[in-house]
Image (cartoon, rainbow, N blue to C red):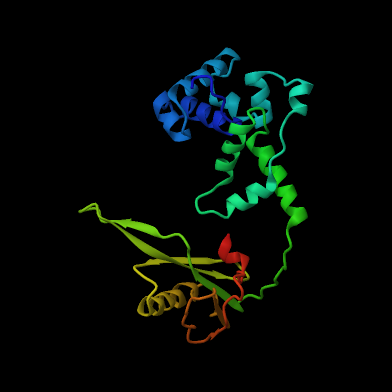
Length: 246
């Protein structure tokens, strides 16, 4: 719909693409998953308030841009803003492919006068700090390396035939530095695991001495490097390390 209101995060992106990149209404609409009419209405509103150059828009934060485009909200409108359902956000974020941007869009569909993206995320982060139970781990340089396969598979496309084939994504993270190594393989079978660790030793070994321990995530077998011991994986579904879940 042409009168559909977009978040200030998307509004700023629309203005950037139009004023700085010179893209068409249709191209911008596709990039933010809105109609070309919505893009046109937003640009018309921006020009009406004197926003015709990206330099003038780039210095505005989301709150300032909102006031510039739509005017000051009344006290009643401010009081009616619905607070984000943080428990729902936490549950949804566990699902593959779900982002904070997507959840904010769904929130605005239910509450059109709700918080903009920055405030939405800020409230969720504040809520998580009061509800998170964490155990901080101190990592010594050269001590532990955490390895696992990503839950989401990637696809490799043959440029000649166009055939797409799924591959496994192996990830290794050094505990102290968070230095990360990733490599795609056709499967998680034993010979690929061995080849992965050979490549891992060669690449990460150039940055620092081999780690004392290699820690695979639960259910995965890993070969310790020549100078490292292999420690057991996670128990009862709990991740070994937050490093692998960045």
